[in-house]
Length: 53
Image (cartoon, rainbow, N blue to C red; front, side, top):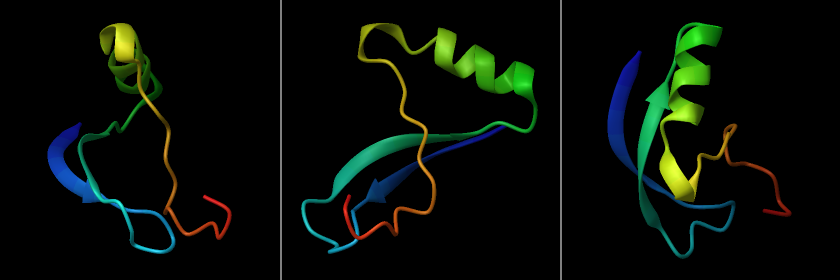
């Protein structure tokens, strides 16, 4: 699994936020990330190109 810190924005590229990005390679890695994120949880994110985001 790769892990890095990235700046995320939506379609309009406004209001950037810094996030830790996990890129799991297996279902087990993905499940471990979701279980280990604590009270703030985790969000699944695609390419971030939806105009309604």
